[in-house]
Length: 378
Image (cartoon, rainbow, N blue to C red; front, side, top):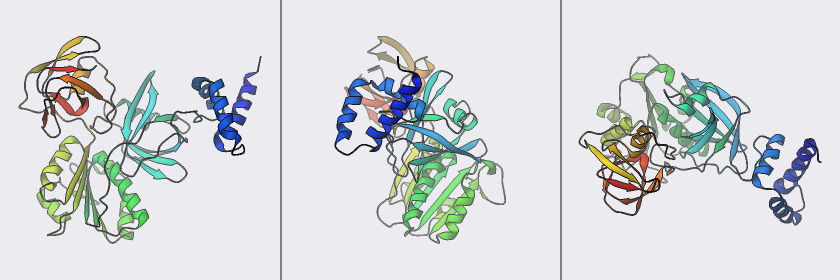
């Protein structure tokens, strides 16, 4: 019988050789194929993680290597990713997962790329948010997190037209990633970043943003509070007068907004008619909308379950309220984790109001509501 420490020594040698280029070029594929055939993935991972916590044959993992409080109830974590993690482009999101009270929980966060396959995420503890509160209050250096595929389409336009970045609260995180990438290349266009927070203690990256603005004359930074006033910041909400003060007269900048669903809807109404282009992501579920009162009958084809749900709620929220636990991720309509098939019925996109009566289509539960009775592939 082989002692456990011998397994560990063997795994360390074979992993370093077959997966890190330690062997000569020709034997590596042969050794890797033989090793993969002989040792199942779960056995490999069981022993490999005893050598290094993020060693895995296939799983994308990252280890917490630094943490720092960024604002009230907000922490910045630096994660060292293993070789299986596909690093995101600036402005994209990653699903970050952890085991909390015996359950696997995953949520999306906007990372910033750092040297050496490291990323940083800034997380605000949300009331009732299991993942956010775990990361802010309990995550420690050395903890290992699962990492999903990058997703999201927020990106700075390729032309040199001015850009207006609008952030509400935690919506600053993809904006700072975009801005850091742009300043690293050298800003050649006018960029205005405007961020609104409720209280001064919730403002993130204040010193960094002001340093960047001092170093780059074409960058303008506007930080405002909406509740508690503070002489360091402006005060007031996003409105037409503020927007006119932020944008030079006659210019039609590209506008990008991120924040709560209400913030994004307000920014869209103010900017979209006048901007050269408008991109947006909302990090909170859309609120229930008036004008779609009543209930709809939902039949879940796989389980044979039939239930009634409110027509003015996203299907994900309605199904969760009924005690079901559909797979989900970002809750913003961009990661597609909650996508499922619809074989009958009409749905309404809660972000745009558009209706889809087509059968045999896929829908995202987090941003679609029932406009009538439905049959879902759940």
